[in-house]
Image (cartoon, rainbow, N blue to C red):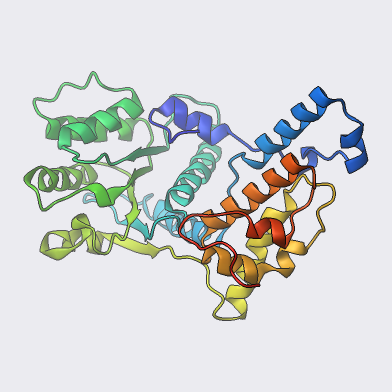
Length: 332
């Protein structure tokens, strides 16, 4: 699904769960062969849909984001009369930033709802999520946030006042986290971008919630760099995401666990269990340690195994799959 842009879409995301392992398509190779042409085609498409369902594994980076967010949530129980400290999640493309901050928001939303006994209260909005658009102005940011909340009727005399009114509305809705994604798009070197940065500061100061920023290379992004960015740097705890590495035993174990998580979901009756784990180093060199590239490689290979009727992933099959920015056919 596309990134949520309204509270209803966010709720849909928060309540979505992929097919559990216990319900994974699990016909044997003989049972698949016994299906008629139409039935086999439908079953294969069901398996491919299953493979492409959105799954979030409990990665180290997601754990770090959640742990710090929970610490800040506890701190927020104390009265504060200045902007609360926030979090900035940064990394190169395809390191899982958006996936992780959205998954963290989903977990926090559920935890806050349980704590408050408001699991099914649609008027309650513990978490707000939106992305920064290219060439954002204060009014564009307000429109995105107002559309998410469903509050376009706010009538401040200017965009800055409307953001303040929106912050007060979010307080009444019980909002504890506001997630702004793709913050690298905000160019504070231009007048409009600098104005947005000032307005975000005003918004945060009137918001009884924690701001979580995410984006590419935020340490050099305009909002957090230079003299103007010093205040935001000091107000936010950095969490830097990176590709996996194999520099020590602990890193190797983390990579193996990630590979095993993908292998467990494969609906391929002839796949040799543990094959991907045994070739974890190969997978690392093919993907550069990128979780997004690993997902693409394994899911594309599994899809081909279904389409070709081989029902198993092999090294030859993996070699035939091209993935972004990585040369295929790396030596084994």
